[in-house]
Length: 83
Image 1 (cartoon, helix red, strand yellow):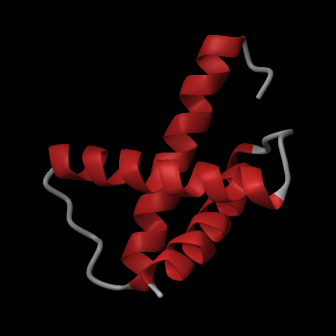
Image 2 (image 1 turned 90 degrees about the vertical axis):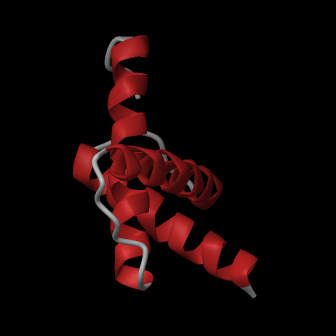
């Protein structure tokens, strides 16, 4: 069941990050992958800052969304803004 929640939260977080950053990429698979990778990056980043938000579903969603936004920003820096 935890994998199912990871996919759902990952999809929502990827979609939110794409909406926040006005990303031209789309699709549910891309959003899920972006959100799951965003969860990893967000957890690492928040850990560096001693911010712990993963106590509930909203904290996990926030962490994954922030991480996904960071991934989009880095991708835009690498590709020259084409993401």
